Length: 367
Image (cartoon, rainbow, N blue to C red):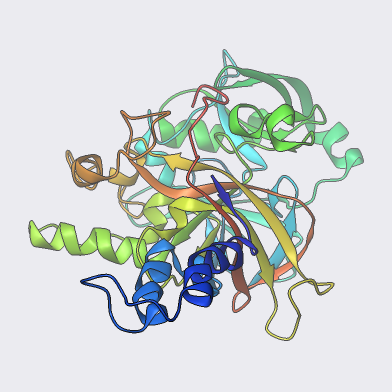
């Protein structure tokens, strides 16, 4: 069932009708003397939204990971585009012989490759370890022009999951440093012009529009909650496991959150600035298309690339297998598709417009 802004009003009126028409009748045994007082708790149990209180939470972090599975960075502001945050997952590394994508799943050391922007944001700075204490920095355009790509790359088919798309493959000179560090022949690839149309829960027949993305696993934006992370960390600390950071889950938008896991039912959200109304020109709407079913990437420490044998996977699997569409995986975070584009910054607020109890994961790119 989908709940909108009008849902709590309709439910409230239905429940209050007996109070209006039968207020002079003697209350049934066990009821409080005031009908309204007896109904309010029942209204509150429905959900904060259904009692007229809109869920709203501050955005506390914006994160981009320009190269898939490599380390990203936080920004105070950026542009939300239909394919995701501005520079998020526009590049990936592929096996040089097959052009198939590579991730932390196979090569945890990929997270030791870090990225940053130059002071003027024109270049992407890629830091690749050469020794335990030293690294080599590669500088490439953050927004490569068609002319630069034609001169410095070659376009070719590439594969990510079961999806064939295309990409601009960088030169051997640039790829040599990645290959030397990872101990295998790899190539850096920038997303090509062929659209990578969303599948699964984001397929056109379900989303209501045709939308594409770059090189994320499935959908353009992942939203996470600090409140849910805190609840997970409390469980980890109870079994003497150190708390983890939200970076383990590689989200794009992190909200402060008030209650753990309330995001599980989000369907439509709106991001607004502090001085904008709900439908102001700076508002951004996103469809929450699915819960994020997790693999064991969060077990990998993003700083050291060390992979914990059990956590947080074992803890998550014990109580977060909540999606009937993918019961063998635990869920953390919500996957979304932006409806429109615009500026986004830390401090803006995320407001919940619609909720649903019908989220069910549908396999997209076989992630």
